[in-house]
Image (tube, rainbow, N blue to C red; front, side):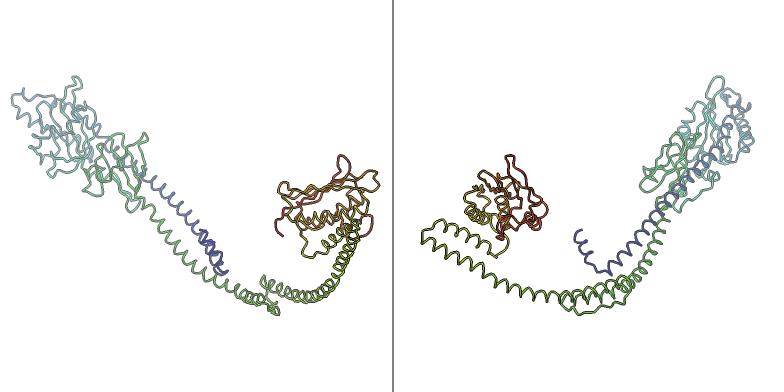
Length: 599
């Protein structure tokens, strides 16, 4: 990631402009396209699901409406007196059973044709089973009946057993083959009811209505919500009653759609299930328990989105091509004068200060050109002034070099006088000249403005020795120097002005011997230097810039403000000089500077 950021930062301005323009176009297009696609998918999904739910409900309603009359027709054997008497008859007790069976068969068939088949056109076949004598007492299809099937398996069929065990209730039967009355064994759904004597509750038989699965198609018109949408009608045993693929009819729904397709309705009768690939919308019938199921593949819902994305991608590519072309033109318009400006600036960096810039350009580049041209004019003028000033400095340095002979001459002369005093046995004069000679030597030292603490203390000792000779033992000096700080470095002449002020001002007019204490130590990561006296004290104001009383020897002119300015200039505002009054009388001056180990 850091490498990528580094490479991007190193791009030239032209690439950065093209990248920026591209981002400003791509990001809104992707955002807008994503929002539009999401809204479209959500709306389309909601619309399709709601339409599928309503379509399923309408199909179930049509089926229930068509089967509702069969509820009443299934009571026909009880409600018709003639048929009821036939159902109660025991043919084993009549004189001519075959004749009466034939006559009753004709009567029942006539009643089926006139009382049932003419009443509704949804029924394909009707069969009425006589329980006492175990034969079909009437049927709508007179042309064909599979007697072998009837004798061997019919009464043992699960759906027949369900009807017989229903105790006279209406029983819808899911998809199965009609092997009794259909020569081709067509797929049918059935409705049956056991016929019970209303008084004795004796089982008299049952009535069976068969409805062709193909005939159910007339109850609805299939609506294709998408190209791959599939509709199924499923019976109570999860077997397919209707499908657009005839080979799927009669199969278990899990074998066709997988286990995820099995749906279990809630109390509302409509359920929508979402699996990985499809939406499954189911509505069930309270009358039959059958379900209308619509399966909508998710990819169909997203087909329009894919088209929209493709269109957006094409538009994006076209816009990018146009954008890159426009960006290149704009970048070149900006970069051409910048390139010229950059080339001239390189010449300037190589020392060619006589380069002229085009000051007639407009806009920001023109402002930069005029500013650089003006800057070069000022630089040329500044170089001329610096040249003159440097010449003047060289002249002054020569004068200073010549004037440096004076302090060296004084130092050498003092050494001669000191040796003469030693030879004549004048020890006091020798000691005073030794101290004064050291002071002159320290003052004449030119190598920088930083000395060690040990050098500063040595200078201070020589200076106070001279003052002691001058004032005839008027004060004593004590030094409390931490040995660990003697090699630390500090600015020259920081302590001498403080000692000078203490002697010239603090001890002036006192009737007791003065005491001067110099302390240097390390505290909290800083170098602390203190000068304390027991004199009469002096205010900070008014003493900082005025020269001290006494001879004007060149040292006492360095005031407190000068020390403060030097400390702040070299070390910053966090280091300073502070003046306080001592509780026992006198003054305490504290200097705080950083620890410097090397110059």
